[in-house]
Length: 419
Image (cartoon, rainbow, N blue to C red; front, side, top):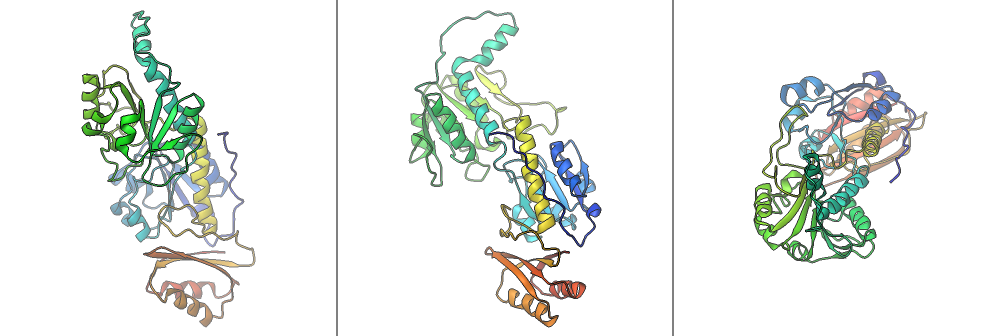
């Protein structure tokens, strides 16, 4: 995928001074995100490391927007302190590091970047499939020790072999296309119905996929259903001499069981990029039961760590947060009703009202406006079972009185205005 050339939209009218909008970015988010936020007049603070506890509160409790990657954990306790927080951007694919329900309850919209590092992870997976079939990591390590071990024993082409993909979403399906182009047969298992690309074939169960695959590659999110989904029983079902690749989440594979299967010769090798417990920084030591095992490629959670992917992620996630602050747009939010209206017209005011989804709230909102003789020029409402979010554009009149009236609606959770 070529690098995107996204540009943030021009600053839109706002009733809140732009320089007072504080954006806090953690975990070394790509500098492109800083450029985009600053181009809007926002004040940006960037930190290289993940933060937690008091350090997280000190850095970000007064932020309006917060950008994180995969290590910073956003829980209900932090959200309780972050009274000014409107939006969180996960500059990665996953959002399991955020308590989404607690964020929704406080009116904090959460966005991610599910598309931008897809190609990087898929390419890494293909490279590892080839490397495992040729024992390239071990051969290279031996050469560095001065050992010349020229042998074809255990080395295979990947053409004609079967790749089993557990999860056929964005990354799984791209991996499928690349693998098929190299001559592999592709099977996949997914709990959701997925349209196969090329000649990929769905299978009825995880067990069926494990039994038929020469390589099993995991591409699933971290959920209770996927925790240790590959353990000793599943490894025993795999073909003798098969390979396992995990570029997904550290919780989905039992590494002790995998290490035992490699020692026994049941599994011929593995490539693992994600771990149940990962160092918080590059200065901390790494430990894993897979260390020192033959034909095992270990990488430090770099599946999406290419220059192209990190820039694309920065543009995608920052762009969503900018649209949310400037326009109220929640399209693609993972925990919010999705609402989008065109850019605010210069002659109008915009009301962003987030509330509990119970009968009568919209009627009360309209009554407040009617009593103030406020003319509605555009309106868009979306709801989920618990919450509703409405954007209303109105003719400019009775601005402060309108805000106070809407705040008094009992079901109101958050209210923001743009003009």
